[in-house]
Amino acid sequence: MAKRTATLRRGTNETTVAVHIVIDGTGKAETTTGVRFFDHMLSQLAKHGTFDIKVSGTGDDQHHLVEDVAITLGKAFAQALGEKQGITRMASATVPMDDALAMVAVDISGRPYCVADLAFTHRDIDGFESELIRHFLVSFATEAR
Image (cartoon, rainbow, N blue to C red; front, top):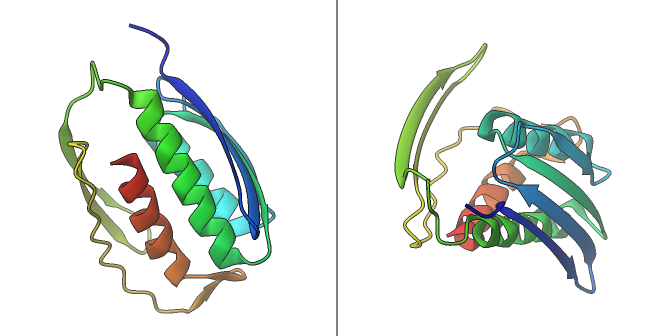
């Protein structure tokens, strides 16, 4: 099986984003977006997904930056998966954490859809607008298909 990697760049009037992904990685992440919580979120995605990512991005505001990183990362993910050989099409997990219970079901069928039932108690997480988490997940799922 060929190595499943992808490198993509996206430049708009608002942002510049570069992404490299290795599907068969070990969970390593190098993230430089200038948004501390977002970098943490991306690192955790790689760590628990056991794929490697390098993400760099700059933008005129968090909304545009988060959206364009999600779009670029999603497209890179889909490109790296290729024909999806050796991948289980669907799976689910329930993960208890200190102050939350995360439940996820994933289907890489090629028909993008995302439901993110997230109840935030604060509008802001360390300077990061909490609603952007939902926006990231929807944009990523759409592009990753």
